[in-house]
Image 1 (tube, rainbow over the protein chains, first blue to last red):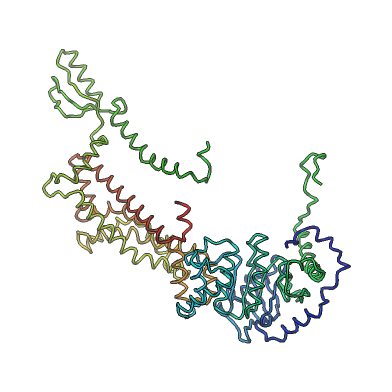
Image 2: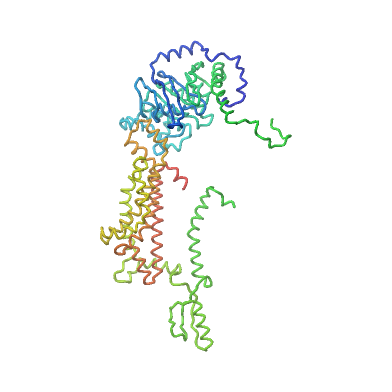
Length: 314
Length: 319
């Protein structure tokens, strides 16, 4: 799946691809159904400044977007575009400088059980078993121990980890830990799940399986997902719509409707709509990133040859 | 140099062997110094005074002085003194200490107001116990709270930082004036010696808690008090337990000072008394027992810790 980063990619014959704006009727119909559903998260004129006085930097500048119920929204952008800051503000872990975040029409402040979050690092509580980790949310929110336990077991069944209910997190693999982290967040039954590069620390194959897995969960339960990633393939594979941010300052460049039909499969990775979307994202993100790189002075031509002239690898 | 590699773990067999050697080697050195006559032995133990009037059987004297006496006796055709090379009285041989260790539990104490070794020890252990418990009752919660809330840390820690440099024994006279001459001031010295370090160490341990765990708990809807009781405290518990083990060791180092305050008591009194009568073997026996109790307690606590915190990876790494 990881075509991203493969130089072959640059030779995709872009002129032959359809426009990423072209949608097949089933995709249009599905997106129309989605847009007809009520708005869950509404972000209005969101700004975030870091520092004070002369040292102020703008991390996020006038961010506007909204997600509908059961939408899968991915947020991509070059490093330093503030996508992590954005999701942390949505989760209430960081203060916004100005603007509004509305959840089902009501402004949110501070973290709460109405927004689930999955982090990039492993954040399962190491002193609790898998089952007790999943019970944590319902328990601190005043549900009885018995109810919490029943619910936790159901959730673990959903992700096929009921066998590991009494294991400790350190006994699980990375992928399993993140599956538990997802159901731990879902056990509170929040309307929205925020995910900050949740599969970033996993190896390529595991990541692939986790993406399919996540889509299965999303398909089966009533949840809206905001998913941060820097992996463009991952974003296209998962999302209904992709919010593209630019860096310095972090601004919305485009909100792309993904023209790839559902259900998704790995085979679609080479389909024309997928490649067209990918080409558009590359254009938006990497052209800008390349400019930044030139500013760094990071040209490979400068590297002096340190091997014999007859000793060639290419 | 396959066995000297930077930060490489060693095999279980090597662990056992080296662990044993760390005790065996010092004992071997002690044996060599005690039993090999030409190693050190700066004195002579008189077995027969000969014609030298001021010598007595059982005396020890410097070898050079003894040699002079022997030479003089030869020159003057008198009977020379006889003796065997010996170490000073303050370095008894291992078998003497072992014997003292045994008799200290079997024979009643020599002096009239003498206490058995185990009575002295028991008194010392009680002082340590109460000192450490009182210190922990104040220090552990204060440390956790300082580590959790930066504002409270700033309010407390600068003063504690200052206070911990004041040597605990300096408060001895004050403690006696307030609490009398018996166990009160002794326990107080242990508390003063332990408490301030305890607050700072536990506050630091608390600050090392993975902030991601706290954030995860926040997004799950955890609030104030529950954040402390359900995330911070369980999260630091294995490290806090380790800190307590180290601090208990520190409490022991304050024991000797504490017991010299007011009426000398406990193991310190026993050691001082034995040294005064030059029963150095008894003194070493007492010192060895303190060591055994200290290491033994720590090993038991380590084992209990492994049972209490099966999820703790730091412990697994050490084991």
